[in-house]
Image 1 (cartoon, helix red, strand yellow):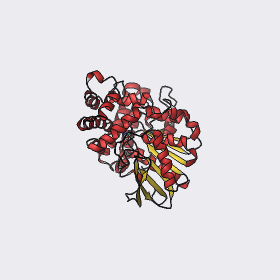
Image 2 (cartoon, helix red, strand yellow; image 1 turned 135 degrees about the vertical axis):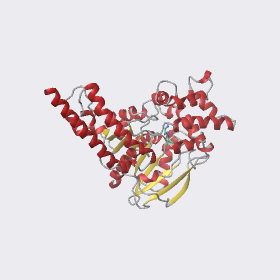
Image 3 (cartoon, helix red, strand yellow; image 1 turned 90 degrees about the vertical axis):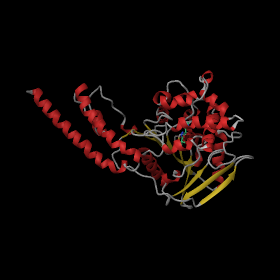
Length: 412
Ligand code: STX
């Protein structure tokens, strides 16, 4: 008797949960249809709800606590149930924020920063507004056409620039006089050139490493930091991404095979150096071939559901060389840091600065451990792990958190 009423109530709650799951799918549908690739998400969520409900009940008994709202999960008393920290788990049910509309720069210019390097920059938004600087990834990736769209154009004066050798900056792909500390001083030169006293600093991936390096060197110039897909150029992060040592290669063995097998067997123990030797070859064909293999590999890992635009960039002769040559040059030099953990060790210098850290749970380029370590040594910074995202700033959950963070700091 007890058993049959238990199973009846169990079947009833299961049905209710299925209905609730499909109800929330239709609410979710509109925002997730914004990008074609996200048509998959509602379906995946439906399947996940189904597996959670039946799988758990059949295999482990009726335990719904891990799959309900964060509040319910906190109330859960099952000791064998995961109890993730709500503050770090982005299960936000509110509608996702989208980018601000496209706009044209109100000003474009060049800044000569050394005998050989000249930087290209653009300014967007409100020329009398609050200054924010965007630090792009790679290094060597250059700025993209939507990078200004995280910022409210009514409020912000947004500065985008291509770092040494990247994007439109000249000479393209140049490695001489090109180190992290050159870039840090370039940011200062640009700030002074544009008559800006203090600004919001926004950077993802390599841009997060550069933002940390800049803020630690010039903390008084930084009003707030918005950091995404955290990268600190530790040996462990580089081996995860570029070597055959049990990291990204285990998640994407298909893509890794092409990257690894481009290098002869005898040199495969140190792929980063093997690529570097080819990327600085005098033979242009060797350089371009290596650049495309290197860039294809990294671009195949970008987004949870694939990054078509990144893969197109990887096929471009100039872009792939800028991205691969500059990246390799920085990485074989350990990012030009004095120690493996310099950026984490010096967080105390910037802990007083308001900051937001946004990390995609399934970021294969810059795995979540680094963001977690940063969060641990910087508990004052807001920290979000977006559950359904990889590395890219343009995955919906990541974009939303970044736009919210930029909005949050517009009153500073
Ligand atoms: N490189 C990380 C990085 O900054 C280790 C990066 N990776 N891919 C990108 O940036 C783009 C998708 C922005 C090109």
